[in-house]
Length: 270
Image: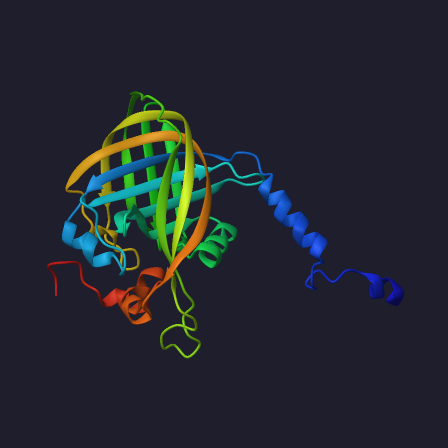
């Protein structure tokens, strides 16, 4: 027994260069992964959009919010994935700045946060269709802080394959609690999307008060569209610049469940 243990592989030990290369190669050969989800876009308060954007991001000409709530057909287990984002610009590049991205599995959460700087948090993601009715929701701490519900109204023309840019800030909070351990960076994450089915939804978006996910501060002033679709996408990211740590610090609470947020009153209350 002692001799067998002597030659057993210690799985927490270092991997060989061949094993590392094999893992990278296998990831590059993954088949297309399709998701089914609801997307809602609306116009909100332009001052609220400006307030949530850390520099150097700036508002675009349209104060838009985009919510995506999807079930992803990952091999081995389904994933619930969500995103609540506002329109943003960095120089000449326009895209979306996600404020919160609930995920139903830790693997998706840690990979996105550590590699890209995505603001992912564990949560509940619901996409349900019952005949002509559809309901999708993002929930955390027992609160469905975003709910989209409506009636499916027919097929829409399929868009051409497109490209979308998301902006993320990648950083490490300092060990001593003051600032960051390294300079934060701004990441451009580019997604190429292919849609194979798209349907129009007539309905509404409900935002509920939540101390830890205060999306109700970005109200639905004019609903642009709700769609239900099936799509596949890939993504790649790159660091475009280092950012001013002091300018980013006031926005770090966006990434975490900050206990002090429980003291924040909704607008109009003291």
